[in-house]
Image (cartoon, rainbow, N blue to C red; front, side):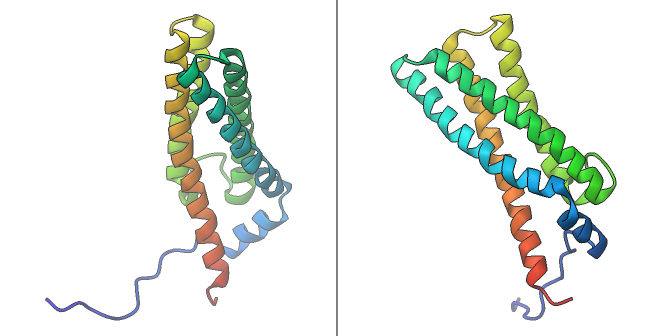
Length: 162
């Protein structure tokens, strides 16, 4: 069968004109724009501390504090992100444009929360806690990638003629 050439099917724009205007006018867009890279920086530092502990056995306390700080940033960005979604799309979570990112965000939050629970319940040894943190961080990286793809889609939408 010969390949077909022609226009690619159009994908739906990420934002309507009204949603884009609300996004651009909202202080929550700036908040998200500040928190996301800060969270990523905290993640990188924490990842280094967690790996250091797993490789050398040193620095358990620093790694633990860093995971708690990273989790705090995650909770903060989730709450402010839900507010942003309400302002832009009219609902706190699961707006169609960000449905799968929000679904996966809950898996990320569940893993981070499981770490906190296991830490305070004493249900895992230090190495087990760090492995759980790595699982949470792996999920976080996937979720961050989802959001970066949406950011790219939004930029591409701005480049397309109306």
